[in-house]
Amino acid sequence: MNIVIENKFLEKNPSLKEVTRKSYIANISKLMTLINSTDLDILYKDYENVFKSVRKEYTENNSQANKYTACKAMIRCLYTESNRTEVDKALEAYKVELALLKNKIDARLATHVKTEHEVKTWINEEDEKKISELLLDEIPPVINSLKALTKLRDYVIFTFYKNLSTRTELADSKFYYDDEVDIDTLLKDDVYNYIILKKKEKKVNYILNNYKTAKRYGHVILDVKGNMYDLLVKYKENMKKLSDDNYFLLTGTGKKMERLELSLTYTKLGNVIGRKLSIRTARHIKVTNNINIQKVTDLATEMSHDPTTALSIYAKK
Image (cartoon, rainbow, N blue to C red; front, top):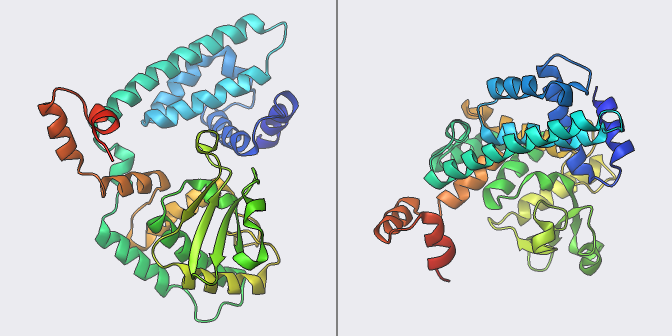
């Protein structure tokens, strides 16, 4: 089914970014399984059933919105002169549904209350320390296979996200020492991000080229905190023994890890303490630990406006 979906996107919308296409494919595939159908036309012919099925299966408004956004993209690829009326009607229905979801999402965000998903995947400093220690204990003393390397990789992934809360674009990163590449050239790349080990300074830079808000913020270089240099040197040297590629994250078969697999891998890292993790929740944790939202909320109430206004307008550097 995935191949059929991908071919349709490639045929009708070849300029669609690969990462976006893969996200749409994953969402449509899950949806088709959910409604037990292989006929993509059902997405516009019976959209009410699609809405009903999604609402029942996914309680998170964001999850529902992701499914509907993918449906809209797929339906546009199914457009013909003979079905244009049906397709336009369906697209309008999805548009309305997404607008309603946006209102719900905005209202929920304004409360600053954790979602059910965030409650399940939220960890504190003690949890973080315990996970880190247990993942470190799983790394074999000698790494001579890809299976062994994945243990070190998992510890690297957890430590990286602990120190720099990026999104899943980390999967689209390549890995070099600074004397192996020209930084100015890397900053012109729109496909890959880069993890750079700076030998003299013993620091780690993360060059972001291909990420969600790249159109707004452009190419950026971030310092990775947490004294990760020695760990990543160990990781780099062990990777060189097992792979000629320079991808930052490899699967157990030596292939480049994709974004979805990174998300699933990170989720499972909490298994060592019987918890699920989430990259999205990790980003919320980072901000929450650095902003006292209760103080902001109390002050906003005192000033007769909302916390968003307090942070975006009244607060100054």
